[in-house]
Structure formats: structure tokens, C-alpha cells
Amino acid sequence: MIPYRTIVQPSEAEFVEKRSRFIGRCIAVESEGDAQERLAELRKRHWDASHNCYAYIVGARGETARYSDDGEPQGTAGLPILDVLKAKGLTNALCVVTRYFGGVLLGAGGLVRAYSRAAAMAVEAAGIVEYIDAVVLQIVVDYSRYGQIEGFVRQSAQLEGVEFTDAVTITVSIEADRADAFCAELTERTDGRVSAQRLREGYLCRAVSQ
Image 1 (tube, helix red, strand yellow):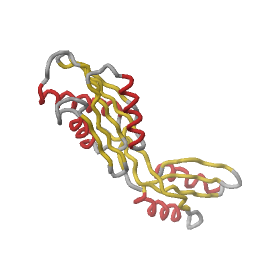
Image 2 (tube, rainbow, N blue to C red; image 1 turned 60 degrees about the horizontal axis):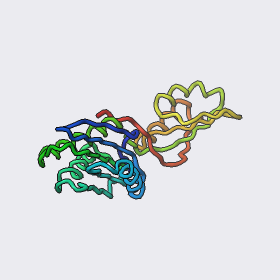
Image 3 (spheres, helix red, strand yellow; image 1 turned 135 degrees about the vertical axis):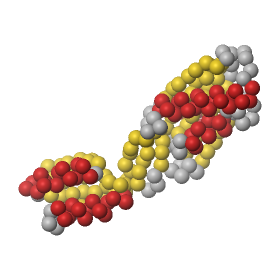
Image 4 (spheres, rainbow, N blue to C red; image 1 turned 180 degrees about the horizontal axis):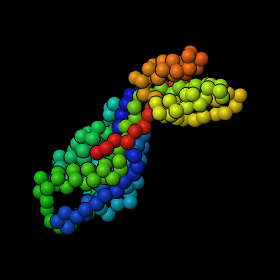
């Protein structure tokens, strides 16, 4: 699994610069097709806008990146939006900045600053999460030993579920690079009577401060 960062939730942020209205939006997407579909929806919604400039990055490694100035002077809109996404290390994210022209020209530098600002505001409003390479583990323990390990398990890993049947079955996720140490300590704490079984690879989701 490949760690990656994306946004938490759809966002919207806007401001007015010399009578032009800029609306920045950021949306999490799963594929290039998904990005194109969401872009089409926004273009339809803002059919009367002067410009709907955008950038998106998709793929765990950010393999695919596209942008468009949508009629603005070359390099003044789409690329600055893309640069904001890259600067935050984001992928699987689409950012669209809609402009309603107010009659005053901003110049190339002013456009770059305005589109960058709108994109940055949209990303900040969306929030960022990091998906970390993790392992999902299952622990089966007798009721008599559950209390012995419950605190350690909850403090050391992300609890996914607990099932109480003939025994207690605990499912947790933990960072891949901590899994071996966690399993070793679990066995040591129970004098070798309890161990963890690896179920599958996965991700842990953690908020990232901006």
C-alpha cells in the first residue's frame, strides 16, 4: 500500500478582487473519470461564469495531473491551482476556481495571485487527511485475559471492532512499521498465550495540520 494525502470533505471559499468574484472549490475524487464528471457538474452549475479553471491530481503516487486555464491567459490560472495541490502533497483531489469577471483587468500577476488564493482557501476549508500504510490484525483472547490486554490494545492501535462470543475477538489497524513490535509486546504481556493474526493490508486515516 502507498501512503497518500487527500482532502477530508468538499469545500467552497470565495472572495472578490477588483469586482471579480472568485469561487474556489475542492472535491475528493477516486479517478480521472470521476474528476471529469465532477468538473462537468460544476461547469453546468456555473454556465454563466467567465471562467471555470481547474486542476486535479489522481493516483496514490499522483500519476495523473491535469489543469486548464479555461480562456484565461496561459499559465495564470490552471497551473497556479495545480501548484497549490502539489505544495500540499495532495492527490485524488480536484480544485475548481470559478471567476465572474467584474470589468477590471487584473494582469498576469494579479490573476496568478487570485487563482492561487482561491485554491489555497478551498484546500484549507476542505481539510487534509493522510492515509498511512497499515496492517489489520485480529486478536482472539479468553474473557479472563481480555482485561489484561484491553488498555494496551486501545492505546497502541486503532480499534476496528470487538466481538464477544465464546471468546473475545478484537480487530485493530496499526501502522505497518509498528505491527511487528505490537505483536511482540502483546505476546510478551500475555506470557505467550495471546498472539495477533494478520488479516490484510489497509490504511490508517489521520488528520494533517495545515
